[in-house]
Length: 258
Figure 1 (tube, one colour):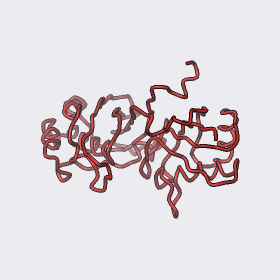
Figure 2 (tube, one colour; figure 1 turned 135 degrees about the vertical axis):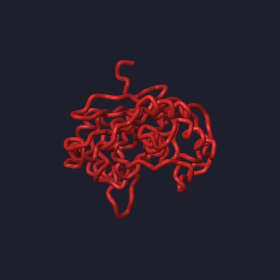
Figure 3 (cartoon, helix red, strand yellow; figure 1 turned 30 degrees about the vertical axis):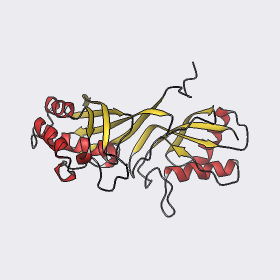
Figure 4 (cartoon, one colour; figure 1 turned 90 degrees about the vertical axis):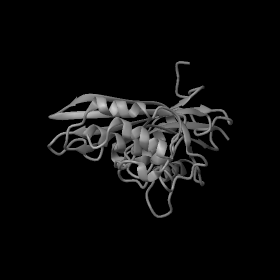
């Protein structure tokens, strides 16, 4: 059975998350339903990570084993036809070895969170960014973010229902940049690690927003981290500003120039 890797782009708004659910729409369920139109049997796809309800992706990665030997471009085109009109697209496809796994072969995940500050409501980006009406101090947020880098017990910044065996993770990058936005500013939080805990990125951003607003000091972030207590975390920000940007592999199946 040939194995295929997909790079998936989706708007998470209509879905209850990536993972298939019996009574709610999911991204996994949509792709598996499209696959069943091509090969009429039950398919189970594995993903690099399970995004929550409302979270988007530019570069989610999944794989599936099929009966037929497909030309990857034709497979992606056929899936995109059957995915319409859902906001899900297969933007790349490659045949991979039987040992390659979307989740276990990955060495890093990159997320981006988009936060817009302006007095007026957002219109074109409604549902795609977290909108706050007050200004934020970029330097203060960067100082707070610096205290989260490295290997730590991130109990404070993970959901109480997180199923990970250990709260210890290594945060490789948390870069915050400011960009021009009509009558306001867009702040982008670029986060990179091998793996993340449930709600970890949204907990980071919600806490750092409080630093930018002046309610917390940068040192308060370090104190919260050391507390190793979920109650010490700042507010968890909404999901609709979060994007799974990309997944890293030593042998990237989508590096067609290699």
